[in-house]
Image (cartoon, rainbow, N blue to C red; front, side, top):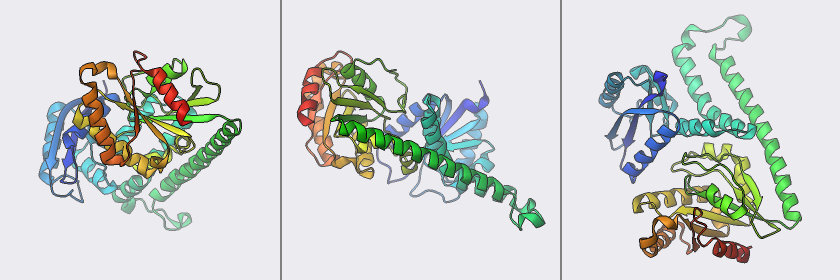
Length: 366
């Protein structure tokens, strides 16, 4: 395997970061999903990040030594790095450095099969790459690469950055065209009397399994995160005018730039008559709470928290003996972060348990 795929994962923990162990554990799962082999992990506790390196200088040296000892080719940082921090870390450690933003996009990229998903991923990459590339070229080459005469005194990195910006503008126009097409399609469906019910929730909550169970479809189900990037439509079984939509999963601390890049996917959520918020009821309290909090934050940022919602407590086949306790915890946690007492329907998409109850609840809400 390419040495680049042997990675050291690192995290700076500040007092503002709650449940850091849970988040770091999830981060390591994402790292594996992107194809990396973790050969070392390291964390540092500081009151605030270093503006130059994120980590303290001593910790940077420790990361470098660990990477050398374990044969790592990449350093993957949980925190989102500023351009100057990323550049300084790469120059100090001598290895490729990526952060959580880039890691999530790498996972997306592994699962992207359609043109639109690939365009949206590229756009999100460019939002991160342009300021970094501009800084990198200016610091490393700017003083040595000043062209003469026809370039008007600009540094050599300027045409490169200009090309990236033109590429971003082109992608924005193409995605805007797809968005307009999506809006037109949704409007036609609504005019024809269709009710749109969109499935949302954290990745690996069982959204696609539920979609298949409710529609009779056989879409790919995988334990890997973010296997659904493009929305899938199908009729709710037993109905003629209810369309179910399976959409991209959420994750904690998703950068708004990533969310905004997937505007076409968001349209399926914002135009829905009803949202099905799927939650894995079998998860430990700390993980369940972290995921509910993260999903609620995304719903608030996107204005989706005001829409009608049914909460689907999935995977009850895994908690038969503690179901009532789990549901009580779920109810209280939802109220804690969303401030609403949602209708909760407990099901198992895997065993088809209580799916008729869910269908009836959906029809009543529509």
